Length: 341
Image (cartoon, rainbow, N blue to C red; front, side, top):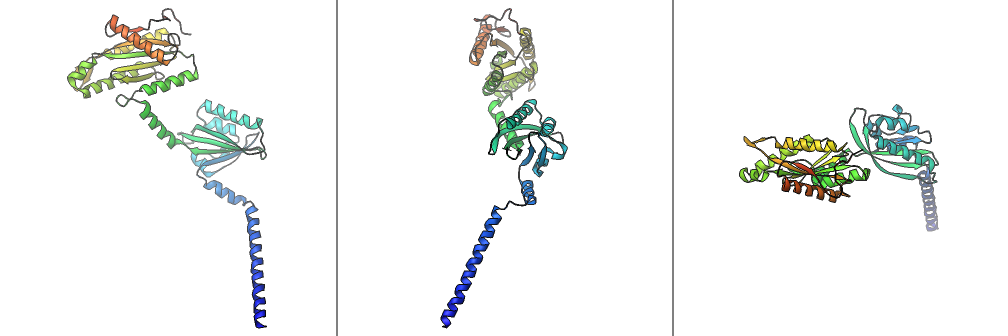
C-alpha cells in the first residue's frame, strides 16, 4: 500500500513537471513570435557597423537614421527633410546624383509584393567637415510599407587601397607617368564614353639618349628620363596622358584637341622643352626628341592602328629629316586641310 501511494505521488509530480514544461515552451514560442519592443530595435540599429536610414515614398521624407549614419556624414536626419535635399547637399558628383534620382523613380514605377534589394553603388559624399568620403550605397525597398531603406558602408579605405593598387599596375615605376597598361585603360575609358571623340597620339623617341647611358651609367640615364617625363607633363594639359612605353620611348594621348593647330603647338612646345639642356650630377647634358603624330578617328580606326601609324610617322621623320622634328602620319587620310569641329 505504501508503494502504491509513493508511486502515485511521484506520478503526480511528474505530470505537474511535464505540464509546467509545456506551459514554459508555449510561453517561449509566443515570445519568439512577438516582435521586439521599439526601444530594443532602435538599440540594435544604433549598434550596427554601417549607416542606415529610411524614407517614406513617394514623398521621400527621411524618417530615421542611426548613429553610424551620423558618424559617416556628420549630419543627422533632422538636417534634411527629404532624400532630394540629402542627395543635392552631400553627393559630390552630378552623375551620381542623377543615378540616385533614377533609382528613386524606379521605386515609384515598379511595385512588388516582396522586399526588393537595390544594387551596390559607389558614392562620393562631402561630410560636414568638408572632407570627401567614398561610401558603398545599397538599399531595400518595402513597397507595402512604402519605405525605402538605404544602407551606407564606409568605402574610403577600400578605395584608397584600390587606388594604390592601380598606381602600381598603371604607372611606370621609374618616371611616375603612365605605362602601356595605363594608356590602354585611358583609351578604353575615352572611347567608351564617346566612340567618335577625337584623340591625337604622339609617339616620341629621345635623340642622343643612348650615348648618355653608355658614358655616364644607368643612374644618370634614369635621372634624365625622370626629368624628361616631368617636362612632357608640363607641355600638355591635365586632361591629356603622358606615358612611358619603354626605354627612351614615350607616348602622349591628347584628349579632344580643339583643332589641328593645338596639336601642332603641343609638338613645338615639346621640342623646345626637351631640347633645353639638363644638369644632372654637375653634368650638362643635352637630348632631343623626334615625334610622330596620328589622329583618331580621322587617320586610324582603333588604338592599335593609331599607335602603329604614329610610330610609322616617327620612323619617317628620322629617315627623311633626321632628329629633332615632328610630322603627321601621311597615309590614306591626309591631315592637310582637316578641320576639327
